[in-house]
Image (cartoon, rainbow, N blue to C red; front, top):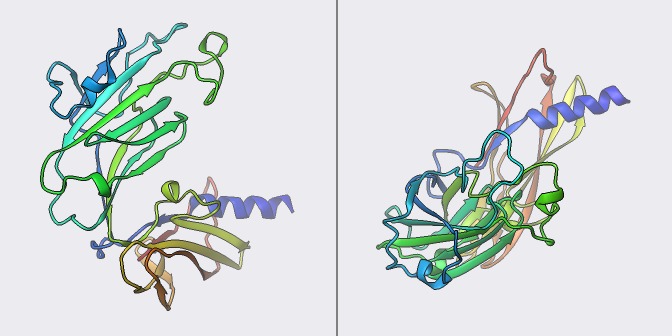
Length: 290
């Protein structure tokens, strides 16, 4: 029984999937957003307003690239820096984006993050170990310069924890310490799992209700949303690859969503004689969804 459970777990961990095929560019675009940031570490707390002003002169700030830490600490440190710091970034949107849904995804920012876009406060995210996503289509400047401002506070916080730094046996550090991404999606799209914030759903959720040496069932739940002003008809097609070889492909039934509606659609793929993963034979499959 324990051996069977281990087999299921290893297959589940090692199957990969892609949110959208590259030959369907109108559904999804994503680009790394790590370059060309300005950074300022606060030593004396200034007025917030001056940093939020799009005309604020940040030419004296440090030019940085994300991931970034507010202060490089020694190898052994018992009193890491704590306080507030600021990041600013100016950017133009790629052409042809108007009418699409725009998202900024932060993989990690320590610890309490406030984010403004074009002077509008979009989120206060509490918890530096969890990602967060912002939708900002409503405040975007589609033709001109957009201004992104992030304020971070890594001081002791009873809401986020873990504990006051002076009694903690590790350091939490600070800054935007993981990647940032800019995403653009059509009004009808596969949701972002973090932004959707639904249990065992959002985005593409893959599970494996049955796995043994002779066969495997791959269950794929795809969460779609229609943010357009009209009903939309569509198909969801899943393709399972072993290397370059197509192993299984779903038929893609006709589906539809009304304006403002979202739903999760379940499909299953059957796999005969699956090549199970192990340290000696790390077989991988790729699941593509379009």
